[in-house]
Figure 1 (cartoon, rainbow, N blue to C red):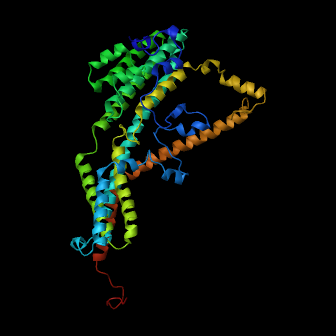
Figure 2: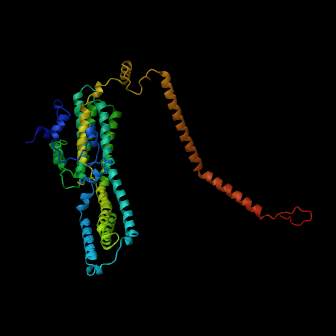
Length: 471
């Protein structure tokens, strides 16, 4: 039988509103957890490393510790690919034939040295891998930026509704409307991740959203009949409608209501940007070129390391491993970064982001520090009377001469900035004007023609005898 928390929204009754405790009780155990992804919820020195958005972090000053790590590195990806083991077999077979049986199978091996590859295939592969990795990392950063823009817009909405909904007398209803609005937005965020998640280790769907307390049974039944790509869009539409009703209920001004709804539409734009980038992966032709070059170049590197006598066969395996680690590892990192919504160690834990933003906004709603905090001017005045200088303005309040100096400096700086801007526009107009350049070209042609005419005229003699003047 379904419980009350399953059949109703996160906070369905104003009388039962308990804020964060209800949220923690409903969500229960998570399906997966990342290594210290707390974001803004991190607090204290012990949780300094959890102020991050990545699954795995590292200390740049701990060199040996980073070398000995396994999870979060490229090592699992390299060792799980058959490409690495194909190269190991090639190196082992060539090395054994060349150095252990030189008179038998070693005589039939084609000659290939590392110097033959150093100036041809290896620079070409390095260039392609560097460019490919940069493009994939750009996609990764772009997707991460879109996700954090979504969360930033939700926080902006939180500040606006906190000061707009609580302007009335019904504080409990205002708190309920705020949490319901954030639940709709968080549910849209979560269902967006359900749409773009391409891993197979976990299950993210309507059932998991219901277990997380983000949607109700009635909402789940309505969303189940819709295509998967429309569910997050429908949640935003419900958030838009709930915002409209809540603004009317709390007498929010039309300008503020329009701004709040505009932020919801901006969230829609950011979510669309995530889906559009996800729908356009790295082109197959580009990926195919990188894969072919990487595979055959690394095989030839393994062959050359096993065939050559320089360096020593005792060290050839180390050089081969380092080269394979560099080329195969760079390609593996690029492939993981190109699609950050899976189960790889460097993928973005969007489901954890959703949990963090919902907890953050719930804590923000139930916090009542705005009511307890006195006016800023009164705080300054009290601290001045108690001689507790905590603020930059301590000792400056009431000093009209000092404030006049500060304002004068600011006005002068602003005037100089405006003058520089106008001067730049004038110079840009003058030097970019086609009329000016036409006049200068005409003037240059005129001078050139005059010089040509002067040079063409015969020189007149000034001597009495009429003979040419000796130069």
